Length: 340
Ligand SMILES: [Zn+2]
Image (cartoon, rainbow, N blue to C red; front, side, top):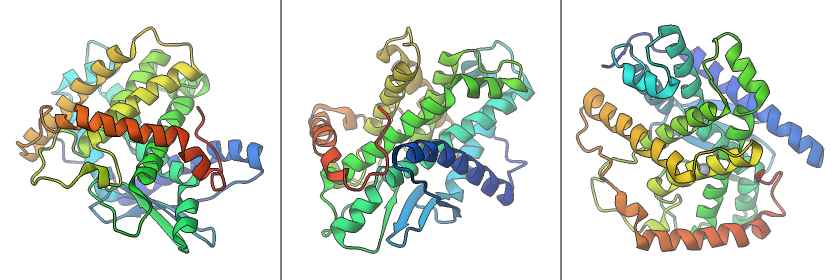
């Protein structure tokens, strides 16, 4: 089932990351230039630590860095190379909406989905930068640099920003990423460009929405949506990020909302779209973990308490803070506001 040969070499990976990031930066900068007559330029780095998948760093001197870890890139690469293997045509069929496997088209979808999954976190980090989160942390904590990482297990130290504000900023960065993914990739011109050499791999705008939802959900699922926790964790209210099952669901809901905002409204209901994405993509990820990595502790039945009533009540509180308090907190620091 797994294809281990032909790993992408390091120069190529750096090239992919820098090209993607700089493309996004120039698109977002054109909004910033129009709005505030400013632009930013971030340094894009491939990081070799294996605990986190992405981070954003900003200093008071104005140096900005976005890091993506090699281990995360490799995980996406191994996953997609495995599920798009010709002897596993089910995955190809569910992505392409075609009946028969076609190798050159499979390579197109693999390349697109790998880039979209990476972009979930690249754009999330840009969200921290453009929405002014790092500038706010520097000011609030009287620091000369600030750093936000996408390490889900990280907890608060006693001298940091209050947890609900921090979690709201993470929520804001996810919304920034999902909104930009939709506005960029469902744009008519971009679909035309993608279809130029690949005889209509993207069948429609809605097909593109599905591919974005699938790739995003896979990015979250590979972070451990269905991984049984080894030990009982401390209070979820004290973590920097909200639990993954909630984050992933919220991300997909925001993709749908953004799609309906920027395009003609989709004929599918939110719940139809969510159920088409959640169970199918997580099942592929858990199956991959079981077969390719011999991990028996990945299952869709794990961590479902993250969506129970007790958790949901807390998410409502964070949402209230996000919608009603965060805009005022960030107002002096934000470069741009999330589009919707
Ligand atoms: Zn973050």
